Image (cartoon, rainbow, N blue to C red; front, side):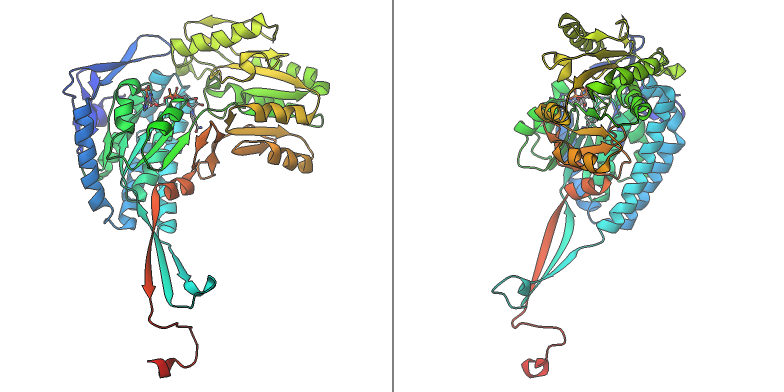
Length: 503
Ligand code: NAP
């Protein structure tokens, strides 16, 4: 059970502690932040509301711990990460239980998230020892006007303190996707977990603690992003911010100093369906892509753009599958569970009502109880409706009928977002042209958008982000290139003659 056994150390009465200097601590603020269970709408857990002084102290400790960590051999860093991954996987049950309670993720998917996170940490450790163990050797005479008098050696060095801020929907996975690359690259790490998801993150951090990482290297500061977020992101000790979330990321980017940013933000992933597509395959992918975790995924299918000639048939197929989705508590592994908060449910309802007023066709009756919204497919959506452009982050999916491929591409490219998109057709040549024309970080051909596998590059264009994720790209983003140049008094060519004469 969460907060018991191996994890009893992280709980103080009914409030979870924060993690600093290798210890679990109670904040001097005397205040806590309540985590509301989305299903029951009652307080499930409480976490510390950390103070600015506590942030300052964590940053100081983090700076000094990083200095010795950077001198720790790469293989040793990897060994500790493998250990943390094993402990995390061994403790998947209590961590998954807190995911169920604080973000209403179906029980089976919660376990999958923890196991996938352990795999990500191990993969990162393996990738890190390879790519960080390699550098470059350059010779000066390849650039015009130079003789071979300079040997340039390059290697990758850590940035310093990395601040990681993940969102509520994959709090554990999106935290470790920042923690593991930061640590293997020799950085220290300060985690600010999402409020909904904080307890799962604290359990995950305890697994790193149990693995035996040095004191101060990893810290976890809890509190509301709206209260402590600016102080963290603008803190002078921070050398890199890796953030995943919504529009908050845009304001952080404007306020942050001259440091590398990894921003993975929202999306309005389009699914373009051509006349020759396998409509059964499309329908299954729309269900998986649009309704998994109740649509609360950055890469969820968020708008279907289907050719008019096959639209009726596709809508019927999707409707039949929507009718089979189960709705209820996450503990029962229901397909559709309560969305994360009342304000999210109200926002989704606002989009639905706007579509209703403007004449969209409701394929099911709109139904809501508390934060639980029944899956809804909206047909005949037009570009003047908000749902054609905005990210509902809920189980509501709009279908726009198009008369040409160009119309679909234009709709996709008119969005502020550019995360992923997908196209369904049996014609690979057309698919490639469409992929090139779509202004998104990734295009999936004949499958719904997806972030994994976690070693694939993952990036958004426009308001969907800065930089690229995926294990290798994250490690590279969290390092800097350092060069040392050896200058020779005379040019030296291997196997060149006259060597003895010059010596
Ligand atoms: P969010 O509201 O932007 O919150 C994300 C994180 O930012 C949370 O940890 C939040 O903490 C924190 N935060 C809030 N205000 C802050 C501030 N002023 N300074 C620093 N941090 C602050 O996003 P969300 O609702 O958790 O997640 C949903 C969004 O994430 C969607 O837009 C989705 O598309 C996007 N997302 C993108 C990806 C991707 O890889 N592209 C993946 C998953 C999700 P609190 O919880 O304490 O407020």
